Length: 401
Image 1 (cartoon, rainbow, N blue to C red):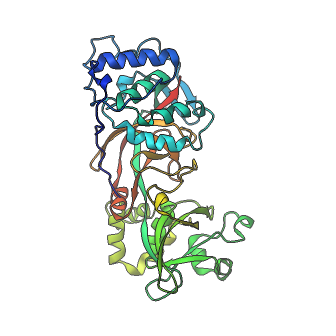
Image 2: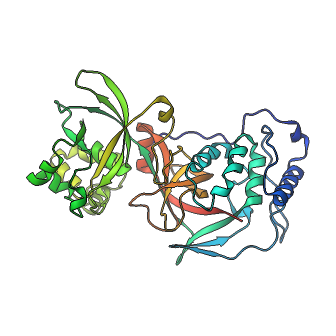
């Protein structure tokens, strides 16, 4: 998957207000915002403020971050433990303006908790990182997300939007169909399994005429279904090409089973990453159907036009807003509501992340309190990262005071 290298400092010109010493300036902003509850005006970004000096015992790490903490909260499968802002790794260093683009997207369809803040969020889109941080400290309370039982460490994985070649009609080399939802989908729950779709005449008859396009590789079709959407360059019958998006339109309501887990259980591979799975497929073409059928779940799609403006963003997540690479995550909505700003910290062989993200999507495999799927973009490089990302995770929700 595309790993967009995120800058940790703004390249905007400093404003006159940057002549105020950074720590005093942050204290002034926090105090002012706490009184009025709104940013009076936005200046262009000053240079990145230095990390505050470590406080002595018993003192808050950030000016204004004092006073009694609120009570812990229970949210579905999770417990939210209130903490000081100093507990958030890298809070003083993140390039918040990049996350602000995702936050503004969430404000297109905000939930009732965050809707009252959206006017301020939009005004802050041209503010400096210091001003955005000060507003967050004045208006939000961080809570560490924990399971109802167990520790605060969880799991981070990744997902992406595949970019694939397809043919509008079947032809040599392009024989794997992608389908719109069948008319009988709601009449049978669960609908036919993946193996039944490939082998039963009645299932194949129900899908006849529902083909959108044809891919070359059945494993690519599986990847597209697991990711839930993708960009497809379709060659039409007249030879012309156009780029479209295939978006999730339904499933057969069968349970999701990991083909990587199936191969691991058989001792066929040593790690369940997509690169390892594809290497096994290349060496065992006669067993590909067995692998595919181990996952009975199938996804159906709808075709969407992909104009240039929409192509600059990801697909719409479960919140109903376009995803932002590197700043959108999928969560278990029973633990974290859609549209919630979340502080994410994860270190591992693939990525070291300490940043603000937005909970804007979900997935059938994203279950649990401290569980997230990181949207990293689209294309082959994005897929490479998504296939390998699996590392420890900590989460903090940022909830209105």
